[in-house]
Length: 315
Image (cartoon, rainbow, N blue to C red; front, side, top):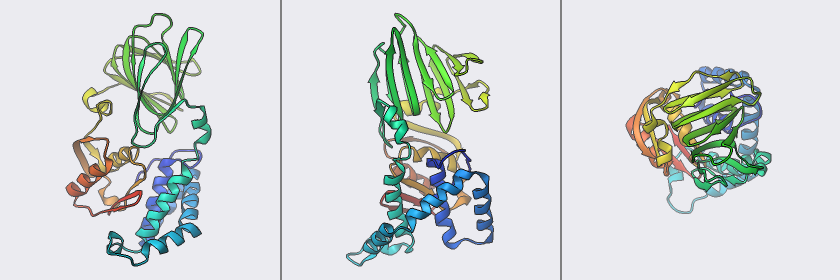
């Protein structure tokens, strides 16, 4: 389970955590319940997420579907699992449909959308090439002679040719970037933008115009509600591996690996054994089949793996 505490309305991270707690509370001891109360108190979004997940869990459609799934028809994997995994799987499938509408206003603004596990290649009016990563929302326009791209959510990799007129301007949450003759990635999730420059340089400024940085090749910068972070050196082969269709982890805690895999899986990946959270993972994986990655992780951690509709559980 992740420990991030994002403010505001229930988001994907909070929903993931709420689903984890629904599992843990099935057979929770006093210590687990105390941790659950601490989690609820840490952020109002946690209570909202848990209430929404629990409402679907206990809804009539879930109960009816669970009864239908549990009805004896022919031998199946469900018979080998504890009964509560069945309604959980159904709840997960329904939650997928329910919560995909929570960002509808944002998606109405976007010209291009990618769902979990999907990537799109685009070419802008100025000749720039864009690779949209999983679960991203993006638009572009020509404002007079100024090419403008907006990343509302997700991740994109830009290859920008030498500008014949004005440079490409890219907006993502709290930052605005100006780029010409360069290649760089922008990731914008949960109010934080991260810029990683592969070649050339990118001028980065906050949307208030009070701070700016010229970010050169091989460096990364995070910008969030608290302003600019420190410039950091990147490992391009690892940090930009997704551009080549790979995910590379180097002694990365399992909970962070699972958090990244969740972005590529059109369902839920749940770790029901928090003792696995800090297990270090090193590996080079294809990003087009996150379930295969989870299977590999289950092997190296000696965890049990349950695969259900729209839900994969490490336990």
